[in-house]
Image (cartoon, rainbow, N blue to C red; front, side, top):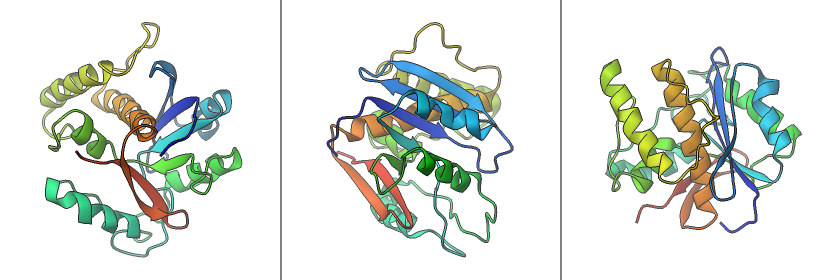
Length: 218
């Protein structure tokens, strides 16, 4: 994908809307310019108003049309990535009759971000971490006891900092494993769309059923 974007935004949304959503915005040069962690949808989309001409990666399905099983783009993804041991939760209307990321996508469309416009994509942090940081091996950072998970998150933060400039005035949320993980996931989402503008990537699905963007394994 080749396009001249000014900002790269990553969103790690709550799937229920009951918990905070993490939003990170990177500028050119991959420096962090904004971070929001909020349950309020107006605050979640505000960074994209402040930093226009962005490309957005969201760690969640944004369109659900299937009643059961996997969505079409998820099935396509699994054909390519199951061999790496990477799986996906099936997302469907039966399992998630009310799904906050769908509402978020509607709000994003109101301010000019859509699959059709080519400036928003579903992304998958596990796939990006595997490609960028872990020699195409799955990194299971969401498993284990609290101490083990924190150690894995610290490792992941160190790898991210090799690519992203995080100014000292940004307070990395480490007061809880979930907030720390959400912050890092939002950065991984932003890195996914940033690297997609300069290296080979794969897309699965379409604008009507959901469009997933993944960096191509070497």
